[in-house]
Amino acid sequence: MQANALVVLQDASVTLGTDFDTNPIMSEDSQSIWRYTISPRYSISANQDQNRWYSNAAIRFQRSSDKEISVDREDPTINIGWDRDYDRGRFGLIANYNKTSTRITEFDGTGLVVNDGSSTNRSVGADWQHLLNEKLSLTLGSRLLKTKFSGGSGFTDLSIKSINSSLSYSLTESVSPFVQFGYTELDNRASNVDIIKSQNYMLGANFTPSANLNLTAALGITHISDVGNSEVGNASFNYLGERYQFRGSAERTVSASSLGVFQESDRYSLGYAYDLSEKSRIGTDFILRKNNTVTDIKTRQLSGFYTRELTEYWQMRLFLQLRELDNVTVNAHGETIGFTFTYNTPEF
Image (cartoon, rainbow, N blue to C red; front, side, top):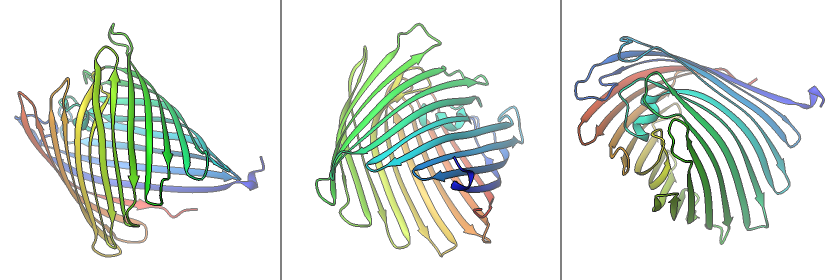
């Protein structure tokens, strides 16, 4: 390979921020803290003919005003991948590594957020997209994910293997029905339980009634070994106006959880964003989730933001987040308010 045949693009940024959280442990006996964060990010890609190599790396340094409530953190994220385009499709490989606070991952996942532990994920995956003819396309994907918990989180280390496929047909310019199949193996290595297997079957369609509006709807069944069948489905919309975006979704899923089992959940979301000018934007998001098995917990989250480009390279963001956690023993509320400044380098 000739080095001068490559086109290399680089991008880097750093975000500095602080926020005030009234109840990070989401308990009825709330205790507030300040957090201070610095997050440098870097990405690089190289292109030659039909091949593209890329890598993205970041690390989140976070310090707390009370380390007994929220520990200091250094959470890295990195992914490395390769894509190859060909006449009728694309093939890609990707490897990921990331570390995140369980208070972030588990608020929406299980609602168990008391301990400030860590979730470390390592994964490798492959994706293949192929156009069978002018109207019919096939997508295949596989993934191996290993999750390890630390810091007294109390969650179960997991190994998840999955294969997913989708067959889509362009019936008209605005309607594309599809069928999907997924197979997952969940290995809970901390227990003597056999590997749990899941099979997912979905039938749905994508609709594009106008250039500004996209709709998706699907229904199906998930079968869990030794448990049985559960009905699943999803519906979503996205409308893009001249200066605003409005989106929403409703879904029932059965997915692997950090408790070492498959968990059925209902999730509803609405989001809205509006461009005040070429340099500023406001927006809000609402998420409601109910876990129907294992934890039987409801979580609600309402957030709002304001962003503004201060210069060509500097951006400011103000945000407010309201959270609620509700289960049979606890009804807790928490609020977070903060701001960030981000510096983006130009592409070179």
